[in-house]
Length: 322
Image 1 (cartoon, rainbow, N blue to C red):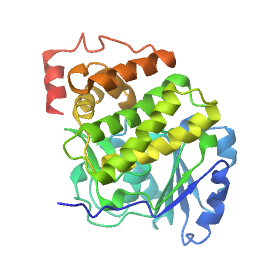
Image 2: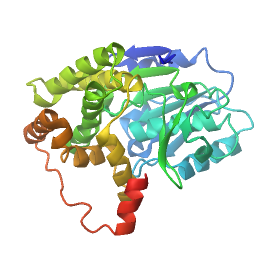
Image 3: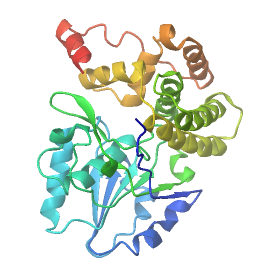
Image 4: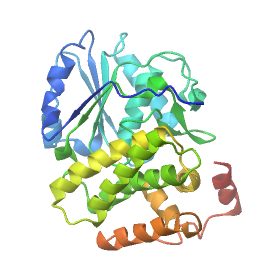
């Protein structure tokens, strides 16, 4: 069965494009604007560029831990208590965690109950508040995907819905220029793994392949190529977008399936968990695992080992369940 695939409605790409945000919001303002921003940007140059007008609200969020349904429900309640009206738009500024939280809040403002009630496929009943993504990390593909992955009381699973897809994204490579090397690598590897899983999976088709192959080439330019860092940032931002497009019309594979369990039990970040798992999957992705190890070497990444050595049988069983 072919999917009736929902795409992001509007896209801006280019250095300095963050400056277009105010003009983009002009025709959306019927109520206030909600900014959902990673708190690492408190007192930063980026914060000074966020132009709050009238009763706009800036909601600082923590991205230290993976997003949870409990946290989404708490943040949504804060927004509902702020105003009887829903915001005209929800804007997520940050990495994959922040963008997932922005998507989830925009959904839960228009759908009753807990976000845990909607973990699964097409369970969302009502359209979300208009929502915009401005990524400051690249790799997860959250800016283009139809899911917001949340850790719930029982499982780690996305709110998968056409209503989840962002209405607008602003891709400004300047915003990922100062990401620490390890974080830049681990998040970028989420994109690399997306492509490998899509291209080698049984759900592959020419739509997914066209995006996956180009995204994989861009990943190789970024992590193996001899390009200046600003060019690498531009390439990685587009690799993330195309990797997200590829996986949306195919499926994830062994690595993501296993990494969800590790993330759930050990509270490790998604990109890091993917790297831990992928490094053990020679049997499934041999040539790509070897390439991944070369990427680690060339980018001075020292990947930890034996992170599950102290896990109990109960914890391993939970990983299996997840």
